[in-house]
Length: 248
Image 1 (cartoon, rainbow, N blue to C red):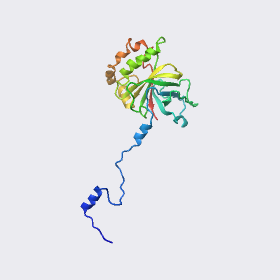
Image 2: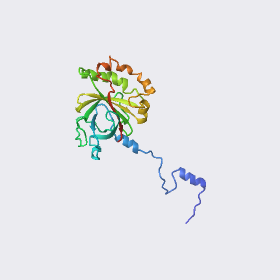
Image 3: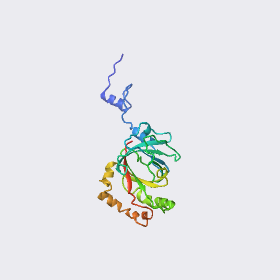
Image 4: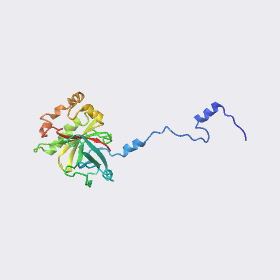
């Protein structure tokens, strides 16, 4: 058998041209696609989607079965952090099928649960606003009895949403209409904020805005006057709200 002697320069040449003959090298420069695939699989909030709010009864916890998605929906687990339903758990089901129905378990309080359709989002939603750690602030809108609902929805589309949906950095406002349940025919909006840290930057305490938020608010505060929201609302827009933290 002939013996071969390889100079250092020749060895380097082999490595640069594709590696030592017969050698196997671990490929470590491939991008990690796991998180990207998980993000792609997640349904995102969008105009026309159905949101089913299923409140868990006090002293109850959702079961493993409660947290399972269906063929046409995904489910998220939220915990009330501030506001009316502080410390109250919420199951939120998202579906693109507005005719979808969900059979709540015995742990769900059907007296206050409701299904909503997203009627306005402002700019199209690109981000996943239902990932863990997001603040999901639900605000119930109380209208005056004599308000024309079509006129109010037109106001949302033409004035309120263009002014507020995308006005605050790291947040998003989307508008809802209840289509069944305890508040059928009523309206609300969700104030989405990317994290607790950002929410606390704007509101260090519940309903106590920071100086920075107050400066931003000057850009849209006019919308609360009598000629705008004052024509429709029976009370302040933030009179009844709950900040939920997305857990799952």
